[in-house]
Image 1 (tube, one colour):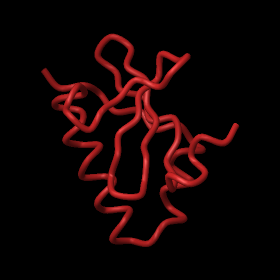
Image 2 (image 1 turned 90 degrees about the vertical axis):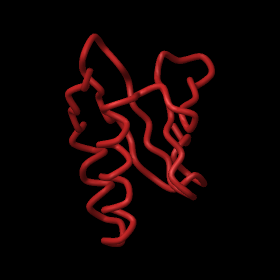
Image 3 (image 1 turned 90 degrees about the horizontal axis):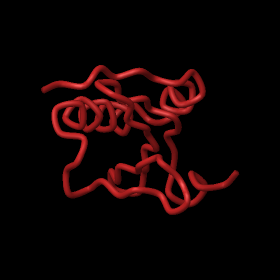
Image 4 (image 1 turned 120 degrees about the vertical axis):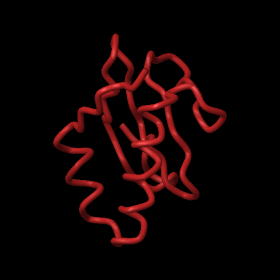
Length: 83
């Protein structure tokens, strides 16, 4: 079962500010994630219903609701968790 991917505007803007090879890698991993959103690189964030996907030094924060995978944030691991 494939999940529909919905990109939050801020996540998409953050993604487009990254270098093209990193952007392509993140897009590819998010596409793979839509096929299996519970792979080994996925962890639930403490105190939240959101999850994180690890892609090298970058993280994708996302939520799952029914058949939809909503990408909330994209960024470097140093500052992705800043509020």
